[in-house]
Image 1 (tube, rainbow, N blue to C red):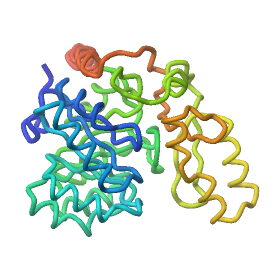
Image 2: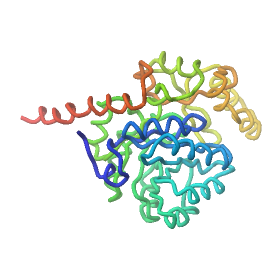
Image 3: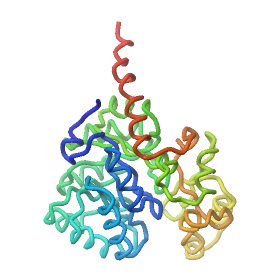
Image 4: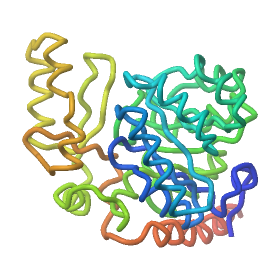
Length: 314
């Protein structure tokens, strides 16, 4: 069985994180992943603090295993959610879409292991100095907020830039991706899009069906003009947003156009007004299955790939 420093650090069986997907990664999904041996993560997204607290407590009612919390630092509720994390003493905080400097002392004082998502070497070096326990190097293949570098390029550079354990994310959905991440120097992986197919993932049936029927060219990136690029499925909404983005719509109107779009996709399956976040790997997600089975499947696939890597050496 593949083990790593991450497993020892966090007390998990498999070096697999579940991505912090806003309005998707709730207490039920996080608990299922943790019970399956990975690290389940409740996503705060743009949700208010008390909603986040309720989902953390739901997760804890369903598992005794470690559960994490992802905080999107662009959220208007970020400061309140940061306080909830400290009060609830979550096992792990992962952060995204911003710099966690303002909250690090609070979390570290509460005994929380902080594992920021980074999209550049510079950010990896910064959070290392701030006292992070590990970093998640996430390439632009991922769904949601994305950076410029791909996983193949980013992960080895981050591994070279820090002594912390590195978690690879972006474009990983099966054992080959897991094995590739380890060969690049990572000690764990984070998967988001693959867990959209988990039986415990409560996204709208339309959303889940679109993931299961996805093709290799099914995603697009919007939001670059505003400085916050996001990868999602090609839907009528995504195309309309892209047209507005490059058709001269004022920034304030463009921001308003995207407000609430993810929640409409997750809860209502609304293709005209909803943003269906997904990574480029969506085409490799072919069936619905329990979260624990997903973890066991990808790890079982990865082992022979890693063992067979030496066959290329003569």
